[in-house]
Image (tube, rainbow, N blue to C red; front, side):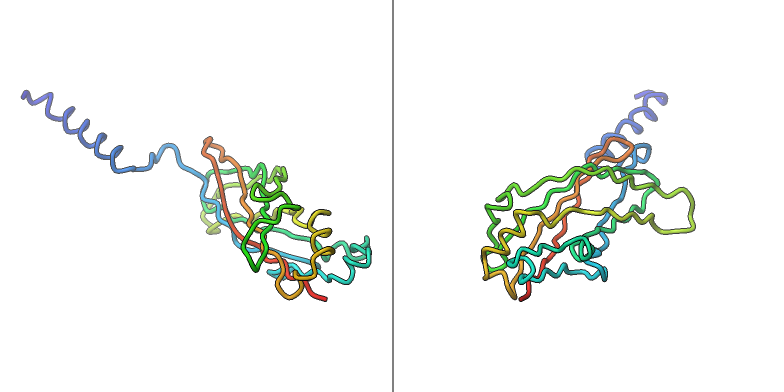
Length: 185
């Protein structure tokens, strides 16, 4: 082997090993987006509280109390690559059986579209950027299910939530988490 061929063979071997080991391309970084926490209701608790008496009496939380059904998700991006959350899916599950609730979309759940831009880091003064996505988790179908099923009291409903999006370099994003809705009398 000639002296000129040796460096090119060595470079080819290093590139092949890097590709085979799953090495990430430093020239095509991905956004590093994680779920931080939920902000629920007027007091921004981690769990959404729904009073069943108001649902069964048909009050359904009027304008004066609409903040009680608020759900926000805080997402953090610790990369310099920006991203956009384009939709989120909510699968409503029975706490006792773990089965999807068919009247609320079944195993496919409900998909809601959004357009939350998650800016990337542009300096070294912070470890991440913070973004809040206002979500529509409480649907009319969910309120009907609570109204018609007393067993939801003191058990509640679990919501498996998946955020879907894409970063500025074209990589797909999917972030999964769970929200608990506590139903009380």
